[in-house]
Length: 86
Image 1 (tube, rainbow, N blue to C red):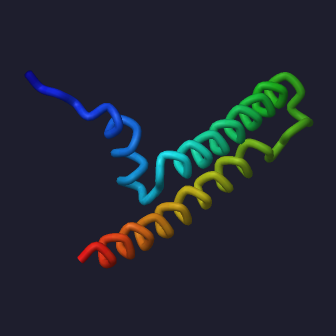
Image 2: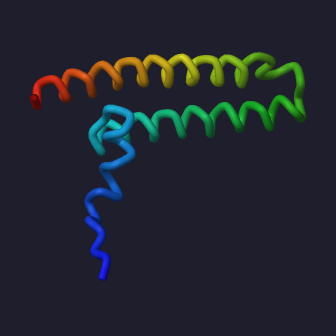
């Protein structure tokens, strides 16, 4: 019988991007809310094209920059942890 470690379901992916579960929860939640708000602005813009003209494109660019910066920081953080464990 294969026994799965339940905690790994919550920690494997965050660890793969150099974050703890809590850090990943906070970052993902922040990204999600930003995406929801940008999506609402897009829907309003569809009906009233003079409103929120650049809101969605700015949100996507901002989130992309934050994600790339987070990956870079996560990679160096993971490397530091790896070096400390030697």
